[in-house]
Amino acid sequence: MESAVGASGPGGPDGPDTPGVPFGCASFNQDSTSLALGTKTGYKLFSLTTVDKLDCIHESAETSNVYIVERLFSSSLVVVVSTTTPQLMNIYHFKKGTEICNYSYPNNILAVKLNRHRLAVCLVDSIYIHNIKDMKLLKTLLNIPSNPSGLCALSTNHSNSYLAYPGNATMGEIIVYDANNMSTVTMVPAHDSPLAALCFNASATKLASASERGTVIRVFSIPEGLRLFEFRRGMKRYVNISSLSFSPDAQFLCASSNTETVHIFKLEQVGPSGDETASWSAYVGKMFTAASSYLPAPVSGMMSQDRAFATVHLVTSGQRNVCALTMIQKLPRLLVATADGQLFIYNVNPEDGGECMLAFNHRLFGIDDLHEANHQEAEGSEVTVPAQACPSYAATVALPASGPTTATLTAPSTSFFYQYPHSLSSGCVQTIEVSNPSNHGWPHHSPINFALHRSRDSSVT
Image (cartoon, rainbow, N blue to C red; front, side, top):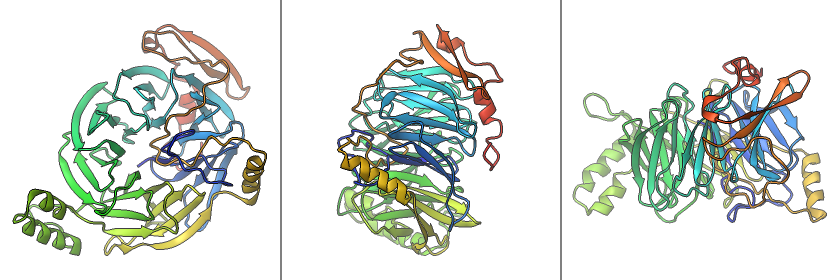
């Protein structure tokens, strides 16, 4: 469910840069009830409870050039990474305005994923898994295949905490890892070309994937790794798929790319009699499947793939964006946050599909923000945070870390430091050295637990 815009990351070679827009990244939280924006001056959090009104519930200017910002459900816990110190991860209790802790890693942070039990930090060749309640380092996955885009997905269902990441740098293999029991679940041979996008459904029973070609999207059962569905986005051209997202009931899957079209696919179920649910797309799919048995294998494979159930045509193309399917005011909606600083909300017809109707278009920045961005560019300041695409992926940051850091993680046996506020009200920060990260953690009444205490509530804690 969680997704982010920011795939190529600050300083990345293929990241778009929109002049005059103070935009670094965008991510929906795990249940798509909140939108987080990383900007050149800090970050913003919006509540997504109504269609025609976008409430900014928090704005911070403490950290500049933010290229990763992730909020945990509707809690007060926010993770922030900046191009100023791309190896440093800061965790804040944003309502109290305090820093809970910070960690430094040996390489640039490319992505951060979290649920109510686990926090995963993805580097180019390793993944660090923390217990989110006390931030104890539980496991370090070292020497994983090179993952320069930081592609990974963590299930929002914390009862299993499945972590998916590329298992091969040249082919589309997916490793599914159980971050609760610290064991590999399965390896899925998903695509012939390298992976570009991954996404779990809310219950972590399905995993969607797309490759760098961007023509085919596949859905697999978890934990078995069996192919359930195969959808064809297009046939004429390869595209960069930047975002995949399931609907809350996992009946629909949306995909956005660098083209002007956002596709919504319907996951048709097969009944006990073997017949698909009655719909026009199911009927056409059956006809294609029947005819494909008389054709060569490559052609029959394409004919047996389902097409989009619904579509959205954006005004512009060539820029990255992030999409999400959610319920707002008891109706299904498609959310699209674009790299030029806009949020589009579309109505989705779950019965007939077709072209989705635009319900509202929100500008994510005001006149003051745009003026500040233009002012910085006029002074010749170097902008290192291009508009990113897909929380899942902030890519390699060119800037080196500057200044001393207080939490250095190298390997599970190496000493490291971490900070936590001795008193949230006083803002005093205490530093502790831990010689063995696998055997130490914060006490049960830590500030992380305090921030998570009411994370299941819809209100901000």
